[in-house]
Length: 434
Image (tube, rainbow, N blue to C red; front, side, top):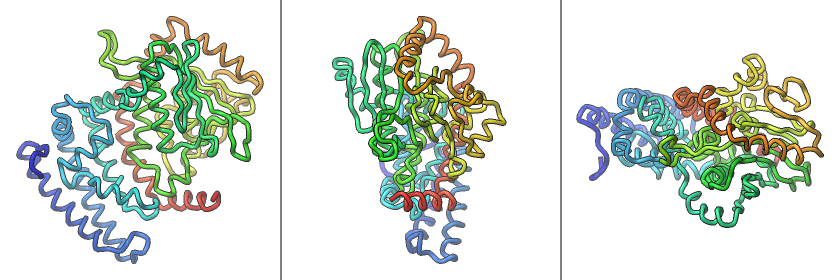
């Protein structure tokens, strides 16, 4: 280890030295091979075999030492590191455990089909941390803290009531935080920018004491097929996934552990004696469609309003990936059979069909949406709503169960985004929509 780096007790340290040496041998092997797309079958087999061996070692090491590693990285859990900070700190402190920043920089420069799949190693590490009895809950708390960007923008928002970002427009009117998804060119398809802007907007809405309730709605589109129409969300940006710009840590995990979980739990503030979290009721209004990640979002809102011509779908399984925490949440809304039809079979649910009532609370004609939003917001501002939604969320989604789901998701989603089927599908989509 480098001078001044974090260390573990003697037993784990000896194990780590063996891991670091084995990881270096694998890195040397990969460095001596041609780039991923032009390797021979024999070279691919050699790389795959070496990676399987070192990943088995990393998995065993994390299972044995996750608590000690996390305590060392967070100074006995006195530091709250977000997942991106945690993996970078681990790379410096324990060489060979997770990819270095240099290795990840090289990965980010490549299309998805040409990467080595080093995010799988980040998934192994984060699965081990989130599985651990004390480290996992502490990491959840770290991810519920407000982002530095939100804290910088908070004085401006409390004074003006307006923050405009690339993907989200945030406005406060009469105690309501209106979050409008405004990526009009791509139908609000999700990418890193949208995740960053959404977490910032959710933080601001939760931190501003003038806000009583939050509303999320899609803005009007300039896309040729939906010119002038409001659209909620078209799901993950498959072009960005194909080009290698949908990262595991900064998108797929940050999205779930960051702003979506903050909508459920609130923002961690170390505040009053009766709660360390500041939470508020949330409403979603769906115009046109909520596809993929848009449909996943609906599962965490306290009231969902949909236009009668809208539809909801979760095509992640047909695309080859895991639809975030929908596998964890959807069954309690729809029951297991319909959940499988939606997740495994890609079933679309029209807002005006009877089965949609398990996913939306209220359906109105498109021209009635604005009036219906006003009525629903008024109901969510009731004095007892906040305490009751907090207790409902605690009963339906205990944090201990959520963190265990996310632990396995960290690895399984990492494996999926490097699956040959996923790379082939998103590559064809990107080529067809170019």
